[in-house]
Length: 635
Ligand code: WT7
Image (spheres, rainbow, N blue to C red):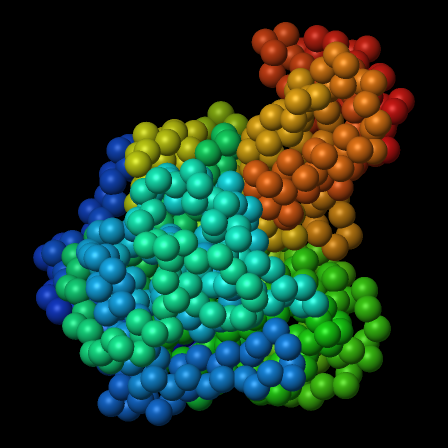
């Protein structure tokens, strides 16, 4: 157990240096001592960022579910693996032991097999935050099927695009979902989506809400009776280290979502090792991450990372504001949560409300607080620290991405001194670099640049499903031999990193990564719209909100503006989901463009932020009169 849990700063620096100087030895020791392998690797790593090609633990054979389940059974069979906290606080929480989870995953896996799913097949999972979501994920991994979880807040069209992109033949969904006071009919969304997915032959339906739904003959089946008949034993499919484990879609700067492909061995090793240290997980701790399993945070730090460590992980079905603003803290007190991991946007929303919602509850179980998804502002950091951590639980501000698979830059609690708004130091094995616009690395401290990673790490995505060229273009073409994150960052005097935000066309709204292009595509499909541009502007709770500048077609101008705005937002909801709706829409006569026809978003961002006293360099601006008109009419 030598190097696995990091005890002090000196040890962190020691391990960090080793991970840079002898990465192969370093990772080999971690992999060897803490995981169960069916066959050992022949080669720890191999990489070439110019292709890019990255392989970890090549030649090894394993199944991640044997690491997350089977190997814990002798010592932790009766230990709780999952605590399920339902949306309605009146409904009883469920405690699922490792023994039970193992049995249920095997049954689920056997059902998938009986439906013709085998190794390498893609399975789409579109479920609310109920235990079956984690079970379905693990069941796919058990038989070597590649899961593609789609967040159950995405629209039918977004779901269909994701199903078709990776040719899923089977979809797992539920009749409906409970979200706060709302009940959503998930099955209806799936039915609509599947009208354009000819490849889907089977839909398995979990019963959750008991709502009225339509079952299509020959395609749809309730899963419960199938599970009841299935055996509780299912031999794990033995996978190669580099076999894909899952696909998870993230938005990009063109309309089509990118299916990030993560592989088995490296992902397992890295998520488990980061989980252990960044949350300082100790046996019998109760760990709760409030993210949805539909995002990478849930994959890595609700399911795989915690279970690989034999941890107890909470799955929460509800929302932070239901039945009132105290729900998070009620759940922390109820289950005596030791590690609590959430998004800055949730903290900001709750910080607005009365402290009575916090003070009613005993939060003394908390040892570590975490944040993820976007930069945390200083005010929110202090509120979290003072009122939730009572000034004695370190906050880990964890920076990472869907593409990185696991946490890349973060304090290690009780080890790294924290500073509000700083993600602090790279995790062991991570080699960040700041680059200038000319492609040169900026060395030294107190500098700012584009954040790149110059050496591979085990959990990095290996490709974009079906489009390796796009993987190269998006991440490896901007800076030679570097992975480009799309973020800007600064490094302070002691070498701490502070993430300043996206430097590309991705906007983080309430912690959700939204590409401007897909939203613009959705708007432009409206019959009255000829062109549009979306930018983000600062928002108290969401971090960023969306401002749309829309040019109407001839004729469109005669229509009622308020109705048009509603229709545009409905259109976005249908194409992407309600999370991408615009906060402000301004109809404009034109968009600021360069002589080469590129939209000057920089100017639009200033207008949206009401900061137009100095527009910066406008020498390439083709149409200053349009800018004047937009400013005059801005909201
Ligand atoms: C983008 C990735 C990885 C989990 C959730 C988001 C932003 C993430 C932080 C942080 C500042 C952050 C970055 C990044 N981001 N964590 N601690 N501080 N910014 O995953 O949807 O792939 O988004 O989220 O801009 O590139 P994602």
